[in-house]
Every structure is written in C-alpha cells, then in structure tokens.
Length: 121
Image (cartoon, rainbow, N blue to C red):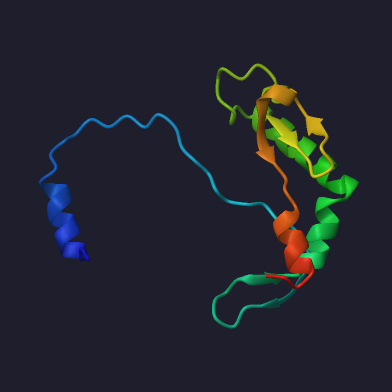
C-alpha cells in the first residue's frame, strides 16, 4: 500500500502531464424516506425502507423530479448542447418517462428497496 509521502513523491515527479477527461460514471442511488435514528457507528441517518418504497411509488416523486430536472436545465447544469429539459429524461418505477424516451439518463428502480422492506437484505 502506498503511503502519503510516497504518493506525494510520485505526484511531484509526474511533471505537467496533459489529461483529458472524456466522461464520468455515477453509481449513486437516490433514496428518500423517514429517518428514525442516527447510526451509532457513523453520523449517518438510518432510512426506513418501507417509507422509501412508498415515496418511490408516490406521485410526489414525479413532481419533485420534474422540478429538479427543470432547475438543472434552467441553470445550465445539463451542458450547453442540451436544448431542453426533455433531452435528459427520467424513468419512474411505474414505467412512465419524463422527457424523451430515447434519452433516459436517470432510472428509479425499486427492487432493492422492495427487498429491504421485506427484510430480505
């Protein structure tokens, strides 16, 4: 394992390389629900799976995500080539899509939360 001093030495001797980042990959998942306690091991909220499952199936999810989608478009966060908020579509658990169906970039999938709610995880 490389320690901090070794890493610093490597960076100092790297010179001035040219680097081009072409894209990225985000593997995070967005979940929402009720928090009933904070984890004693780390300062993170403990989410109730049933409440997250209910939120994912609610009409409120679509309303909130429509607002988020419009906000990020209005503020240029989708890039200068994006002509409308519909260019970055969202697919919901019931199969409906906000935006262009061939441009889905965010999918809400509830199978993991369903397993958690059933106590199978």
